[in-house]
Every structure is written in C-alpha cells, then in structure tokens.
Length: 217
Image (cartoon, rainbow, N blue to C red; front, top):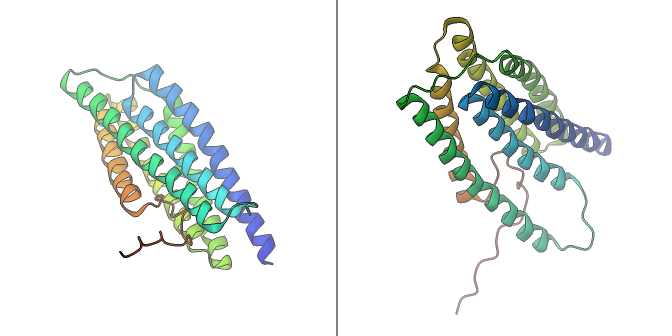
C-alpha cells in the first residue's frame, strides 16, 4: 500500500512539473506578445515551481552511492541557489512593473493569458486535493506542504485572471503592473524564507538531518 502511494506521489510530482513547464512557456509567450509584466511574472514564478518540483521528485527517488549527509549538503546547496534566484526575479519584475506604471506603458489585452490563468485556476485546486489526500495517507509532511504551495499557485492564478480580465474587458491596464508588483512581493517573501530556513516553500527538504554543529574548541 505504501509503495503504491509513493508511486502516486511521484506521478503527481511529475504531473506538476510537466504542467508548470507548459504554463511557464505559454505565460512568457503571452506576456511578451501583450507586453504584460503580470504574465511574465507568473511565468517566472512557474519556472521556480519547476525547480521546486524537481527537488520534490529528487526526494522521492532512492539514491545509491551517497550518504545521507552528502545528500543533505547537495540539496541544501541547490535550495540556497533557488532561494537567491527568487530575489533576482523579484527585482526584475518589480523594476518592470514600476516602470510601466510610471511611464504609462499600457499592456495589450491577452486572450491567451486569460486562458492560461483560467486553466490554472481550475487545475491547481484539483491537484491540491490529490496531493493533500495522498500526503495524508502517506503521513508525508512534505507532500502536504507541497499541496499547500499548489493551492497558493491556484490563488495566484485567480488573481491573475481578475487582473487580465479587467484589462481585457474594461481597459483597466493598471491592474496588470499592480499584479506584477504583488508577484514580486510574493517572490521576496518566499526567497527570504528559503534562504533563512534552507528549505523550499514546498518543504521539499523536510526530513533531512539538521546541519552538523561545528566542533567545540
């Protein structure tokens, strides 16, 4: 039973990464075509979800030839790099969003972007439930935490859908860069948490042994 649940958890992680790759590519394409920093920011957030999901898959695979301590060191190094990447992307999105607001660079409406946001708003809650229930059955704190991150992605999709819809239907272009600023703040928060705790927002590193304390002299 446990083996079956672990395979299900791995399949869910594979699906998450595959879906995020598609979401990332379509969001970036729609964002560049429409000049929408909200869509570009959403696509870059999806890119970080792909990196986080990759770490999650790595955690579910048994590793041969590496000690637990070596695995822990490699994973913490990867997680720290991802953490600093949050800050770099947040700075880029904040700069672009602020520039569009200050210089009135009006993004065009994006029907493709609306479709991407709508699809994610529908898929993410269903994926959240599947992950959470599997995590409950497995007793896996990391998978349940990962499910909550999936739910957060769904909420961001709803917010993006509202922003894009306001621009598409009513010409309220300011909603687009404002949502870009929201994404930038979200990335700063997650980056700070990741670097400070040496854990991804998905808690993909749950269960790792703590770093060894330096020897007393």
